[in-house]
Length: 146
Image 1 (tube, rainbow, N blue to C red):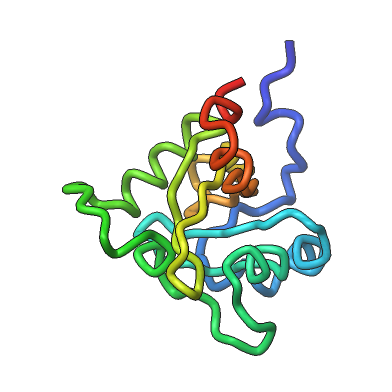
Image 2: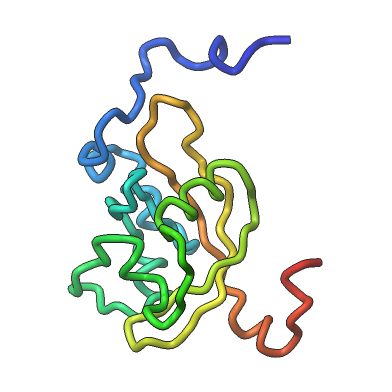
């Protein structure tokens, strides 16, 4: 069986600095897909959001995107943990985790985050796709766990 490292193009370099991400050709594609996408560096700084994420969060196209994960999680929740660290650890290891985020107007959104698409140890970012479950969970709280 071929190991994942052997299947990768040896010329492909890891994303070693978060500032590289918005300049990569893939960001153009991610910006056009209708799925909310979020790229976050390990300290919780948001380095990329696509238009679908902006729409999910109720942001105008010209509005500045959130700068940190703490900007998208509800202020009223007393988690007692470092939310950026918890989010990064969870999306690095587990798919389909549920999160409560606050949109631009302060309304709570229930979203499901994918496992990070970037999985190499040397990559300093997590790239996740989000799915809005707010309406579904409002009508049937068990629906997200099916």
